[in-house]
Image 1: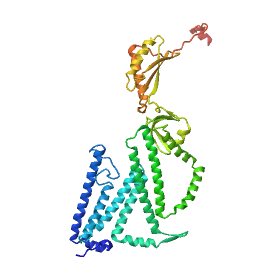
Image 2: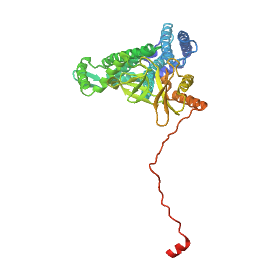
Image 3: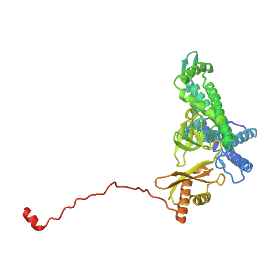
Image 4: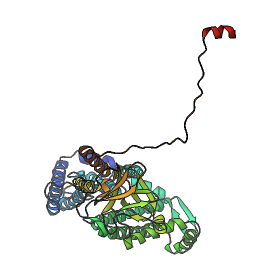
Length: 448
């Protein structure tokens, strides 16, 4: 039997070949290839889940995705097995028609899954990346259709005829398109590698270790993106020796117009390297107090207990005073003030206040609460109650309110008076009032 490779036939011939009975054999082989690919993905995913946290783990990844066949691994395995099956069928003398359609479809699916998964992992909250993902999907499927119908080679030949003379080099529109696609593929692969390495570095890290791994991840991503950019420019056909002039111009621009930006980036690496500020620390910067939730190379995010977030440039954290409430010790001292009558037994009240405040949740027993007679006020004795907490990220106003409520209940239960503002007014001398005799009716008539 004559073997025919339909990769060089036109689309009508392909349609005619699909109507042959031999296409049923190809369909069966293709179904077996897809089933084998799905089974391999299922087995590999099960092995990964058991190695991580157990069989119930279904965390998304670039390779496996969130479901069984929506990651990069399934189309890649299917594409590899389809090539093997295609080669075996050719050796057996089987005419091919279905696999000419299946292989471009699987290739397009692999490109789309790779780009979508990588961009979603590298830029999880970017609306622009969603548009880029849709564009890549349309381009990949359009290229597949053009290739299957035989139009793509003709288009490439026509695009190769559109040329420009740039210096000593001749550049065609086909070179630009192919270089752009190659550059995009290189950048996607670089983002994939950097995202995987960053996830591996940050996995299970906390505190000071998290800060060091964060700076390592940022530096690694910057280096990989720089190398990927050089490879992409080389793929487009740009001479890399021309970058020396660009580097000089960039240095002048940073020195003149990008001083603040460069200072913020340098300050970010300094903060992460020296660990003066760490993710999770409670800080006060310019009157804004909250917990550090993220430290990037340019700015630091501080989240207040109220939910508000402040984005602070890293240079500000280096050049201004920053109150770190949890650098060496997470314990924070809080206080509240209460006024009592002058006839109150202060010593007995102090012991009762210490016992009452010690029973409030979140108040530490070591160091325990302390009560001080802080001032002789105009209206009563002013007593300051001091207490410690070790979880300032859970809020300070709420625990202070609980302490005040407990103190108020104690004062009412013990009958201790809370003084109101009092003023003593003295009058010098006696008040003299002029007594006016009443006017009688006859006198009133005579007055008329």
